Image (cartoon, rainbow, N blue to C red; front, side, top):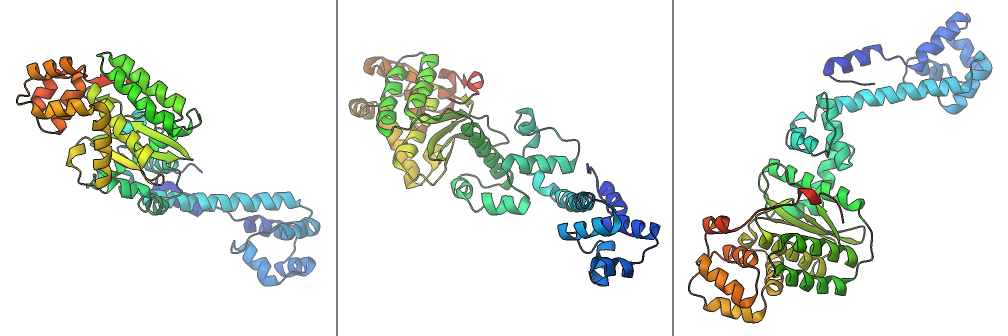
Length: 373
């Protein structure tokens, strides 16, 4: 039942043989008519005729009757019927998979395959089946009803406009789910998790990127928050997401950040959703945090800023008249702040240009952390 093309399916439909074929061959060999078989079984002739034509299935009680009349075991007839129905279903399923070519092409399947999210496929039918298996849905209709009407749609509609990008973002979120299901399940403690953010903030004041990453992961682990690192696919610029999965909080990060400031801001932003917002929603965030005009996202932004910069520092910040890199470095030294965090926040507030930011920041590659804490 390994159908690869429409020609394979057509050939299978032509060659498939219902158990009625075997039944007809058997009674012909015995010189028995359908009328005699019906009488010996105590069944209407119409029922026997429909079984022979494949219109009616051989039920278990019918199989036992055939065993007594024809001397062929009930298990044979039941297995013959099962295989026939299974093959019919496989043919119908393959026909539906062939019709899903347009749907399948909306996903960045090659990238997903290269990352090991889905298996390689030799043909379209396998490719569609692999995608459906990845999303754990039976068919395209089920995908639409589950994902387009679920929290995924609500999470993405504010930031993703084009369908192809939405599909790539949906795949990214789904992979995060799968990774989170394999992670350690420590008890979640909200108070300890919130306090751990200040531990991360304290470590971020240093210039030790490795220490900051280690502290984020370790503090999340010990407070019951799952962190998963998932490479983005397609042309979407997602930086983070958060949700509750099976009553456990999950923060999903991508694998590349422009600097430690962006990583910290993203982590604290997602932490705000975990601590303060609806457990039934999925929050998905893109690169341009500040472009959003959604109250709940603005709250998360302010939460992150409040922890990353204390009140005195923010007051001092507001008095700065120059945002040259020399002055930013001096401010960072004066306030014992992390310069990368300052650069990122200044970029988001449009105090410095993207060019200035790029010249000073060192990108972070979390590929070595592609595991679940």
